[in-house]
Length: 383
Ligand code: TTP
Ligand code: MG
Image 1 (cartoon, protein in one colour):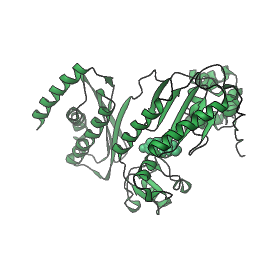
Image 2: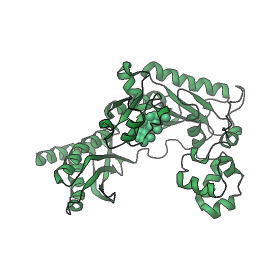
Image 3: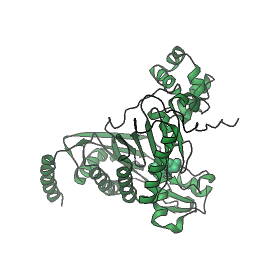
Image 4: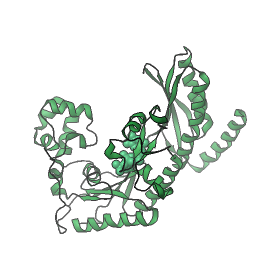
């Protein structure tokens, strides 16, 4: 059965008396940055991710241009499958520096439009625009003004959702992609959600969707209609959360949480390896990316973790929390290797190595100076 489409109500409709939240998500972000850098790629199927090696490549797709999506190519698909589905696509490696620099400029541009803002990922953000717009017509103009500004300054398109809470705004920004916007007044939130499949709500994953389906619950409207006690019985507190969301209630806090929780990198070997030097090289090469990114955010890390997957897919993680926060590359390398080495003793074949830094904190200038000094000392010791 085709899903019933939501239509934005007339321009003079009130958005409601509570908060007004805007969610913005860039369109096929990594691919769009590549097209901007090389306009000859425009209109072509484009896949950003691991090297496909003519179908033998390992690793995954990061994103695909809208021209590649009809072939079933999407984020997280193994790159070998993407190659089989669309061999004529242009496959490009990930240029993290370009995307991060673009992301920062976008956030600068967009944040000026709101009262508060929160960066939610490399290509999405929330704005609290309570009091800045009151009607559907004003919200449309507001969304269009942001889109025009981004197009003018960055040459990129985005999609925007405006609603009475974060969840409505987030689902709305995805509703009319690419290059669209969807405005959902408070009074329409339930109707907007009702026909959507439960998995459309971020926070309801495949497992929950399966359990809901077993109970005959397929759409968000089905959740809204259930009694709270029923959902509490089957899902505990999570059931109550789902009930609230389905009924158009949800968090409106923007920018109150620390936005970025961890930064990680993973690498799948082309061929499973039992050589220690292979694992070491990966850690060595990954560390600067992590350190670079943390510098972009002007944060320090407290915890370093590793992930190790053997050829039979058994996976181990280990973590170490430091006595003092750091931001340098050397500490990442040293600790990650300390954590990895004991696991490699048996010389089993390794499929994947990953490094993560987390428990971030902002640092004062004085701390920065000290850190600088110790980093220089550490570098000397290291070389
Ligand atoms: P998304 O916003 O999920 O995707 P997108 O911007 O490419 O496409 P859409 O138009 O549907 O929003 O993610 C933003 C970027 O994050 C994306 O361009 C690439 C990266 N990414 C990954 O590297 N791996 C992933 O699994 C996902 C989902 C995204
Ligand atoms: Mg996006």
